[in-house]
Image (cartoon, rainbow, N blue to C red):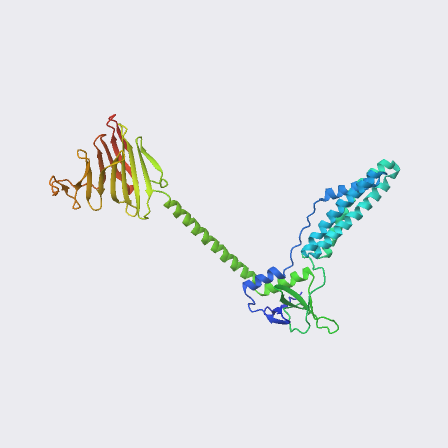
Length: 429
């Protein structure tokens, strides 16, 4: 069969009694809107409070009620009818409210088929077993009503679905009409010469058949066949190159998604790395570095420096705490404070070269190193004989004979601790 002729530029928008050509014809956005709006909707399912077995049981109960010659039988019939009618109204009404005419027709056919099948099943099985007696015949009639209700409803619903378009449901109801004086050009011309125009009416792309027969009252009539609408939409989108557009768009979306994932991963890695101190532990985590010592790295309000605190419990029970301010970029110690049981006993400006220590006799802090790096003599002036301060930070606890050597650049404190109470040497790295 010859391919239809497609004029991708003939797509119109109708409003205020006039039809104009769509401005963005051929774009991915416009083609996507056509695909979404002009493609027949999928057939919606029918939900029901009662499933097939319950509906069949209801039909059987109604048949059973009819066999009971008493008031009880009438109540059973009335009850089953009320429940059945309510279920039928719900099944059909849900599609009527949504405007889904094809589904409403299928639901109505299912209801009618179930009722007819129940009656036919009861008559057939009940009549065939009448020679077995009234009780046996009545039982078979009940079974026939149950089975017939299910089979009759399903069969009638399937037939109605085929008649209303199958997987591409038809529009049930009067087709939309456009004024005959519009000058719509054919968007798709089939091999048999039939012409169809694609028009955006009220924000929805709709196919209209172009009838040039002067005997017909209307020239532009909506296409209500779901299968035909699907065919026309497919013809147009294929000619408009929508397939390659979709592939390119999906590739761009996939690449954007990969980029976002990479950025998210990098941010996560950076956040994780920034959450760890130089010792590899989360900031603010006290890390045991010896049986009697802990190390604690903490962030400060400045992003360029951190504090490294080493706390040592001496054999006598006293606590020595060494607090270093460390440049996070270079690992160099900027300043150092030493406390014994919370009392400041030594301060060092490691970059400037100044240092102070507690004079235990007077209880006052005295400068022991000048900015030049020389010691301070008894006269308060720099002494050339004073030894230079070591590159690493060393502190000697006189009362407990603890020597602690810190290496903040490596993020780990290395120290040799001789406990004065026990004389035992403690080493940690």
